[in-house]
Image (tube, rainbow, N blue to C red):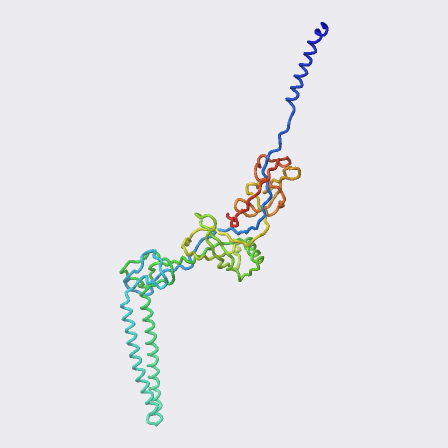
Length: 388
């Protein structure tokens, strides 16, 4: 027992030291962290309407200066500045009395010409009878015929004078040539207008319908023509192509119209084609001169693949998405993107419908490393989500 107790202390120290070394060894060993949890989702497959996005300006279908076509003092102004008027509404009246007198004078001239023509016609008939009886010479009969023809010509001239006088009298009333808004007057009551040259009294602007003018690049012209051909449309069906417009203060494209005109050639200096759409504008929300956003639907593309726009990255090689590949290893796939549909982006090429695309936690995912996928389901995008 004494021997054992004599040996025990060294053995105990050894065991204690060994235990301490073992503990230190366990604390310094590397334990890799678990793979990061990352949300993944299959691309959403749905029908998408591709759009051509443009910008343009509104313009009035008709803008006409109202001018005085006859001279005279302005007798009345029959509208208030900025009034909306119907076609045929009288807006200005130039003193009509001189032109009424001119019309009466022309009518009197016609009555005189009618009387002279009647008398010379009767005289011509008598001269013809006398000539038949050989009572007068041929020259006398010819003089009577000439006089009758002169009086007929005077009748015709009198009729023309009446028409001219009636026309001049009608010009004393300046009327709206179409429905529209009349601008502030440029003349004052009692002012002499139309003396020497035409005087602009005001301007009338048609607001409904209204044009939207824009230019289309050569590449987009080819896209539109290809879309029309795909839908079986010809150049004669141009006015069936719908156009949607939104103002800078509006969300989306609430105004609906149709193509109205496309230039027959592309301008070589700009590489663009001038085009125009027409809108009913019944509520007068569009005014000439507005800058507007335009989109032109190009039909429908079925079975398009969409992913959240936030899932798309960019590097020197272009756009890409991260995909959970075999054994949940992260892969980087270059992609070609299309338009934005709501919060989703069309992927034209680069992924398949069974690829698990990383949709969140992208900062923790590194290509070539493993992740723990958390499967999510994407919600369908709105059918009218092609905003830009």
